[in-house]
Image (cartoon, rainbow, N blue to C red; front, side, top):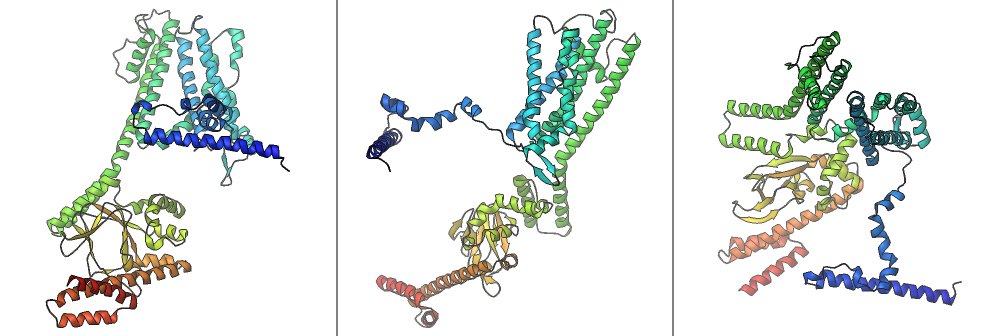
Length: 572
């Protein structure tokens, strides 16, 4: 039982909270709607009294704490497993490991050969070394042990299984070698950067991040060329370090070696670049080791350049393959039309279709692309692209959602050019249309008689699709004033899908009768109206026709026609 005192306190707390809400609502309304003075652009907090601002924890905690980075870090909880393809934190950490690997790959040979590591800056180098080591260790302890893997075709997410799988893999062995504490040898032989050469073994994360990044790019061939060029520049970097070290071993006295002029790294890198790319124009070697290094540089340069040129060639071909296929199809179609003496106007329309289709979607037939995918994946793509359009069609609003998924696979895109008729009055229609891009107009006998304009998301032709007993005549002219993309759903495809959904058959049949009845009413009213109008001019045959129309009409139709008669009488 709640005591009266506790109930009074609860009521008082509620009234205080309610008063704060009302005050804030009024203040927000005043600032955002009623206050036209720009000088009143102040926050809501200072306008409240000090006590309210101090005690108003209900409005502070969620908004302010979420903006606090420390709050997010402190309350972050690691999941039991990580998806290496979609986990953003995992991908970001692989990027950090890649940066650490590149740091070690560049700086270890640089510090081992050039005199850039001194007693005055040793603490900076050690700090960078151990930051990269921490990145390696965290990757092993927090990420790799939770990395998901495939087991008999299924994704394994259990933390114990992912840990045991990682420890049994070759990747774990390479990672253990990479983080082995070889720095302890500093106490025996001093701080020698080459002792850390084992840090270069951790290449799995580097290649994993490279593959993910390449797959996420639209023009991956550019990245591949840049990566291969980076490999070439890195080989030149190693060559420059080795060139300086050999010059140092000869006491900088060899005519072939570095002569202690200028910036050491720039001079050595220039020599290594000139020899690696086989440009030459460098001093001739004297010692045997110099000849060996020169020959190795030439061979490595030819090998790397052949790879770069091959990748550039493949990249250019890949980039132009689709364009070349488009041109071949277009030229073949043009040659066919010219060979068969097709009229110039039709040839122009065909050219326009090719150019517009290619410029807008970079593919001439998207169905050919989608057919290569599994049925389930094809359905998922169709749902994300076209579901919004199909769900807005009136006749399908009450149908099973799975029926809509099946119908999505039956939709066929078609492009109409400026000046084309989608359908004409009196034609037999066995399909319906859904506008996805552009617009169409409902016109009369001429294009200038515009009765209505239909925009994307609008469907028309449902009567022909749902007509009972075969096709149905079109009741209007539909004209495309510009480039219009439509989806077509054929009656045959609809029947093929609907036969698996008995409930949908009843819904569509009921809607078909309703729409046909409504359409017949419109036709009857139009005929009677035109008959009454012509009575004034010819009181014989037209009057008889009007009577026959009235005789065929139903009770509801008679009510509508009586309204028309009253209007005609009032006009008289």
